[in-house]
Length: 179
Image (cartoon, rainbow, N blue to C red; front, side, top):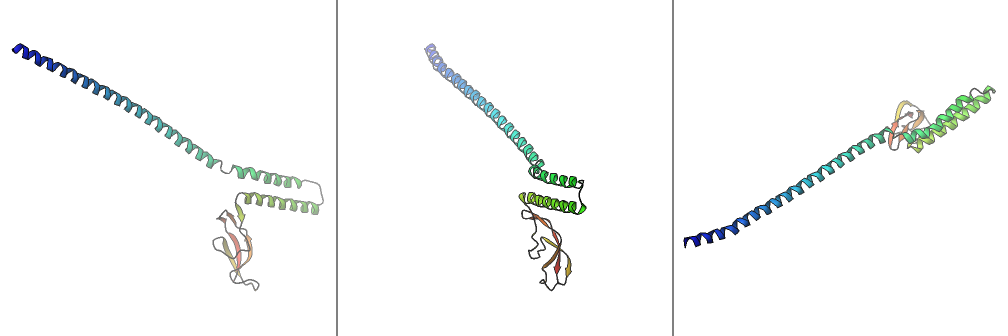
């Protein structure tokens, strides 16, 4: 009888060992699957991080390049003004009566000035309006004079034009104001 009991015990234990081994094998498979997924996620993370770094570097390069060439359009628009000035210098060498030559030269310089102011205005640079009332933000009063024709604090004369770039003052207008 003791042999029979031992065989029953052995038979009962065998399936239990097999089930334990299967559970361990299944856990090992799950662990390997999870490790493979983790490796895949790490790889994806590394790629995304590398892409992000590349995009960041490219945007930084583009920003510096944009700043470096920001005035390109403005410079291209100034080239015709340079051409006009070159023609004015060349006109001084023409044989003509001095009074006629001076008049033509003056006319050419006035047209070139008009052309230059047009380019500046196209790019947002405008002269300060001389008819505006005195404003210390855009005018620099360099002298005060008595003037029966003007109210106190009004602009009497402009020594030097002022300019604005959009809403910012580039240079104050130097003005004379009435007492």
